[in-house]
Length: 255
Image (cartoon, rainbow, N blue to C red):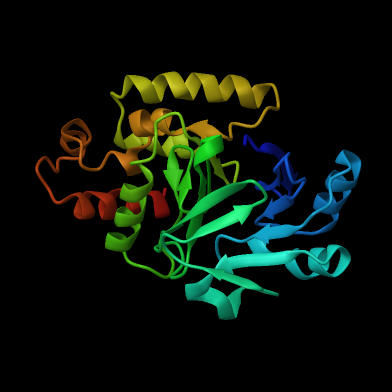
């Protein structure tokens, strides 16, 4: 059953998602940073929020949890490894668990690195990935609580999903991510093409998210650290992919 997915821009650059399963009418909010814009959007759509799906504990992903729960009586689903930091959590999910939203279900991926308990939700029927701050369009999250090895392992898992997967990340960072990516992968034609496409979208005030995983595999340097052409551009040909990832992530942190 194909999900009806609506994007709700909040704060400076966050995206919250309203996800409706049409057969049951169940509606999940993914990573509500704040409550009011989400509740307003749901009301305008005539949707009744039944669930919150959190990917990790950061306030710009959970800040609206308690207010939305108070006003809707919804069930809050979040990462079992981080249950103590998810406000109002009712249901804990772990790696390889499935979570049913009406007539469809998500597979849970444990993807630590950005935080120690980060998860992602993969709705195979809708070819939709909600990955929080693990994978961005042409980027990835900062490694705050995990290790570089963990983050690369997490990204490696996500990149095995079908290339037509729609990547619903939680921030509009694409344009700035591309500026950095070009600095480490200047000869990547796919990246240059994406740069122009993104510029046109942003000039029109359009979101660049979701992207397709296939586009990310071709242009996102954080998914390409084991590729010889990128390694060569960095002067690290043949290096361990974790070392290459750490090098790129370190450069991005100070870019």
